[in-house]
Length: 130
Image 1 (cartoon, one colour):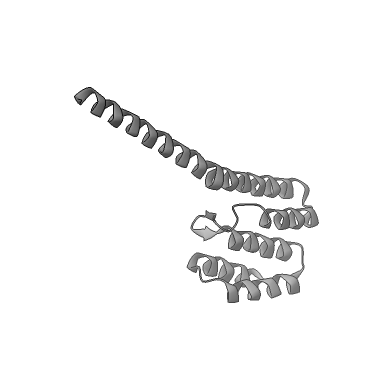
Image 2 (cartoon, one colour; image 1 turned 120 degrees about the vertical axis):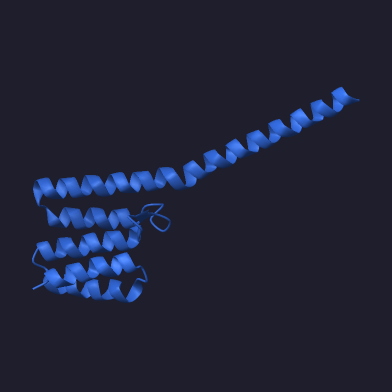
């Protein structure tokens, strides 16, 4: 009887371990991988922008990044990824001399965000607008 009871416990424990591993792997696939891909794509776009100064291509890439899985869940430096992308867009528009578009986007994001760090970044961008 004791042997049977221990065997049942062992089987139960194995099942729990397998379920835990499956949950962990699912978490990585659903959350971690998309966010890492998003961060890598943003970094690549920023690097290309620094090399080529092709603002239109940079803005297009930032727009594509907004459509990627993980944007709604991700945060960079405690700033929601969606807000982070908008701040990058505002900065690029400003650097390209498209002040009116930059200011309009800044005002829109300012109304939509509740994140304090985003608001701080927006204030910094606003101060740099002519």
